[in-house]
Image (cartoon, rainbow, N blue to C red):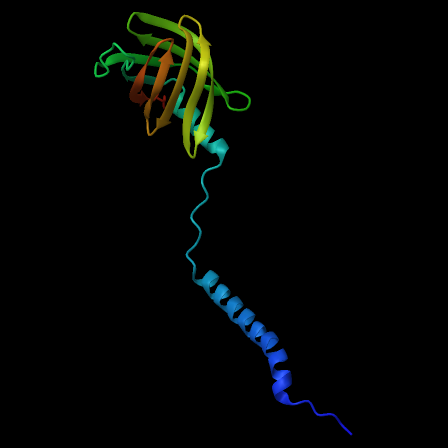
Length: 178
C-alpha cells in the first residue's frame, strides 16, 4: 500500500524556499540595474601629498597681510590693528610639523624667527593648531588659524590677551626662467 502525501501538505514547506529564491533573484536584478544606471563616482580627492605640496607652494615666500582684534575684557573688540607676516622657505618636516621661517610685524614688534608649527587638516583645509607654544620674543601663544583660497583667519591667545585675526595671502612672485 502506497502512502500518498497530499500536495497541500508539501506546498507550505516548499513555498518559503521557492519565494526566497524568487526574492533573491529579484533583489540581485534590481541591484545590478541600479549599479549599471548609477552616475560615475566623483573624481577622487587629491592625495594628502598633493594638498601638502599646494600648501607649501602657497606659503613659500608669501606675505600675509591683515588685521587683528583684541577681544579680551577691557579692550575695544571692534578696533582693527594691522599685522604682517613675511614667510621664508616653508617646508614640511616629519609628521604634521612644518618649518615656517617668519618675519612678524605688528604694533611695535618686528622680529624674525624660524617657527615650527603643527598643521592639521579639516578635510582639504590646513589649520595651524598650537597651544602655549613658545615663540622667541613673544612668549607662549595659542592659536587656531586656517588657510583657504589665499586668505587666512583664526583666533589667537597670548597671555591674558586674545582676539581674532584675518587677512590675505600674497603669494611670492615666480620668476619666468625663459
